[in-house]
Length: 114
Image 1 (cartoon, one colour):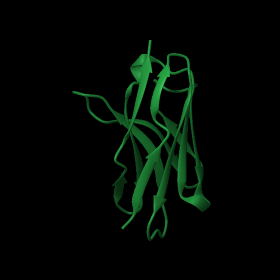
Image 2 (tube, rainbow, N blue to C red):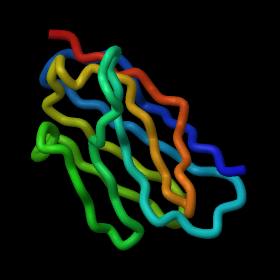
Image 3 (cartoon, rainbow, N blue to C red):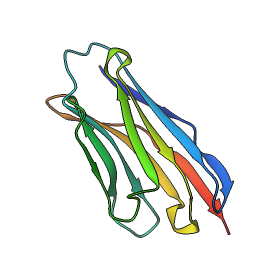
């Protein structure tokens, strides 16, 4: 069974940067898309960024120009470089992979202090 393991969350001051990583492991034939979503208490999970196997990307308007998603297909790993972080970016960030079915990581906490 495929597992997604996230790393790189933590506490950072506003204006700072963090880099999230997510590695997929297990029996993997192909991953169509990988991405990052986030969910704060009392809110729905929302898309942050998503990248297709060919490299095309989608970003939430709130992170455009600040976050960069990238992917290493050989390593089945997706990254999220988060720059100019704001307190409103505080959330649990979940890794996502589309393998013919949806697969989610357990989440990593990102906290941005003002």
